[in-house]
Length: 278
Image 1 (cartoon, rainbow, N blue to C red):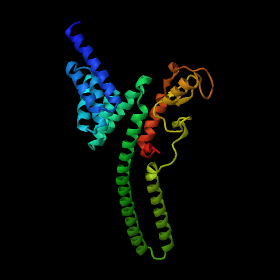
Image 2 (image 1 turned 180 degrees about the vertical axis):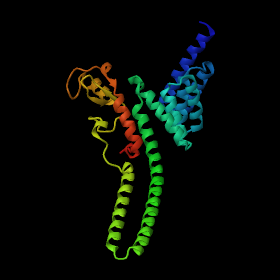
Image 3 (image 1 turned 60 degrees about the vertical axis):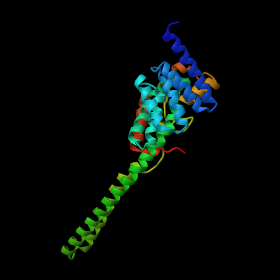
Image 4 (image 1 turned 90 degrees about the vertical axis):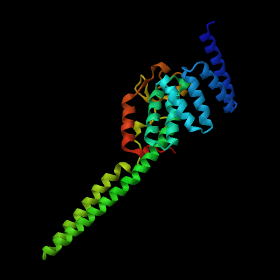
């Protein structure tokens, strides 16, 4: 066995030791094992993401960021690395950058094999961050709308006062016109606030089993769309058939429903309140 193969074998053994320590919540010992593995084989991304996860458990966010960035340099498609980098950036109040990393992790995670499937976990964190972002922008928008509305009402009152003084004998006409304009103004501002008013998410954007907005929609040969995690669990635990049509169904037949995924994204972009998790 050459020196490189020997180093790789030793590094793998250290990774397994690190995993054992991690499961026992011995994060310091796990970090030491992964660090040794990295010293032997610095180009293996999983050693960096495993160590980052230990730092995350200890709330050492600076090191989480460092290790996650290194893992992304080695493997730009690492779901865990983008996810942990996103969390670290959110901790630093770098909201926009953190959300961008979580969105990247979500996109990559949707195509991951079931064993490493993290979509639900990523979605929870992304939804929390997006909802907070929406709340912040909502208070700013509400204040701007209210100020603009008051300025418009004030301008209309002033105009009404001027018209009133010039239209003696036509007072009723002026008053009617003024109240119609105020009503029209009210309608305009109500319409402007509609997107920010929580209502119900349309049924076609929700999984018929979870009743939640889709995170990772897949379509079956019978044309029905389900949440991937839920239909996979059904196929694994209940049986290989469509829960609604009862037709035979194999996991390999599930195809991402890109049209629904894009419709969900468009809806959430416009209605940030729908990110709220009960």
